[in-house]
Image (tube, rainbow, N blue to C red; front, side, top):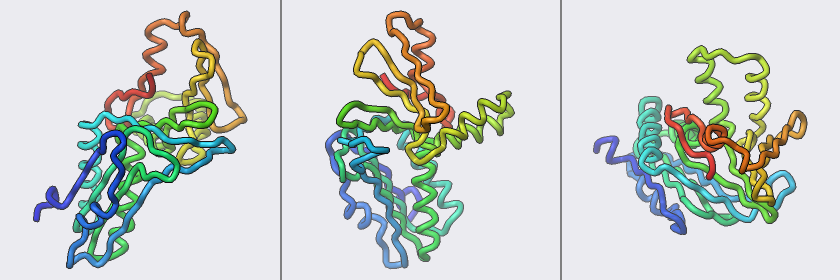
Length: 234
């Protein structure tokens, strides 16, 4: 069986839950001595704030191509049998599974290492965006893997950036949810640019009516590590 036939990638439409048993069944095989899985679930808190749900958006065609490319890269590094990756879109309540990965291999080390690789690469470069909804507001989140990859690309491409810029990027790598995020204030005419770190945190209140089109565009897009501009928030 060709490797493409042993790889299943699905982006599920809103309100369709992930059937984990389906993907485990897909990767199961008599010749596979190990199956490693990862499930990403919505937790109920973040830094003292009560989380109500997570909401996901994606550029689906590119997301599917990116995940398949990640799976192909994994096969070149480990001796794998099958890979299955599923990601939900729309709201995912507390306790719900937003992403699920299943990998089968002859040996457990290959399956486990691959599973870690796939989720890390998915977080770093696949055009899927997460909004964290609290009981008193909501915030778009940027993964630290994305921030790390962006810094690597800047260094690799030899772009000029001063020490302060590098320090800011590194400063924002607090956790898988730790990075610069854009939060909409309760006042619709204001926005807050915030960081997970309190020290060095800067807030900018800008009147929407006074923002020019170019400044608005720059806030609403970011360059992904896959080399395309992707939407950060509306």
